[in-house]
Length: 134
Image 1 (tube, helix red, strand yellow):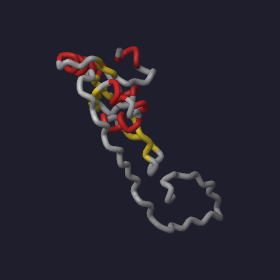
Image 2: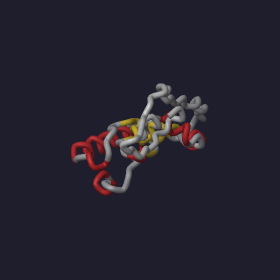
Image 3: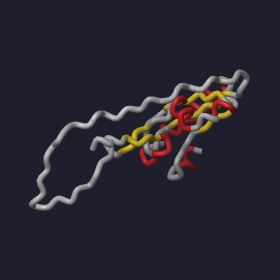
Image 4: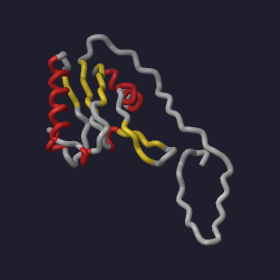
C-alpha cells in the first residue's frame, strides 16, 4: 500500500488480485542532533537488541534493531539537557538468543565505559532474561 502499511485479505476461490504498482521504500530522516551542553556527565547506553531497542519497519510490518545516540535524541530530545549520550549497538539479538557469551561481552563493555569515565551505563533490556544479564 502507498501508506506503507500491510493489510490482510480474505482469499476465496473467486478472489482476483491485480498488481497496480510498486510502493516507494520507506525512509527515516532523523532530526538534527541537539547541541551538547558542556560539562554534562557522559552516560553510555549499550544496546543488545530486542524489541525495546527496535523500530517498526512499515514496509514489512516487522521490527529492526535501531538504538543509536541519534535515535535516542530523536525520541527523547530532553536527554541533551541532562547528559551526553554515548550509545553503542553491541548486539542485535532478541533475549531468547542471548547466551552466557553475550552476558560476558556485555559486562566487559560496561567495564570499558566505566574505565573511560562514564558517569553511568544503561543496558536497555526486556524482562525475559533481565535477571541473567544483570
